[in-house]
Length: 303
Ligand SMILES: [Zn+2]
Image (cartoon, rainbow, N blue to C red; front, side):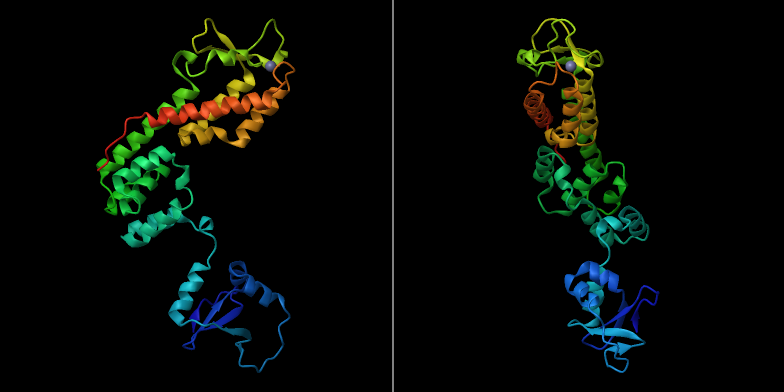
């Protein structure tokens, strides 16, 4: 008999070549509505039936033992519950490079869209769209601190390529961050139109007392300094933190950041009129400038 014997095993699956695999109803239920329904129905207490073995119900499955084992393996908990980084380390330790490659795929699956499109395009231009090298490059971008030597040890890309990729990412981050907090606090990308927004206008202490203390900035070609409202400077600061992780416009378009700024800004009677639409417009401009800045980072040649 195959399968595990731990107490969680409470059902037996019978393969077409008459092997019996013990497994758990909970796991099957979480993987399939069919099994979930089946197990929710009252089971007939037929002790002598051919469908009872060692006191457990037996379900014939239309798959041979090997296929059934594979199927059960894939029924295991969702990938995020598997300890993928540790699994990767173990696979690397014992030189199981094909296994490690599958782990890389699993770890990057569904999140490669968090790499800015311009960076992804640059990777694919160099490494192709489906190669192992692309996988290694994407992994390096997404997990720069996490065993980036693994992809080298696996022979997917070279150490020099990893270093170039990391340098490219650093430059993209620097370009994006500079839009959020430019040199000398000079926001050249903002036109003087923005000085007419309520949150920059202040004809004589009209803002609530708590709506100052954001420090001063320069805007476009206008003369003199402009006072940042604290909520605006907090938004820009939070945006900068996001850009450090993910240097692209979409990072600052997060609804969470936006709503927080809107909520804080709306507390001030001077800032609040029409704040939602003005802020949306501002954020769209901001995001566009970030993408422009990241696109202008000179492209690396990785191969
Ligand atoms: Zn205000």
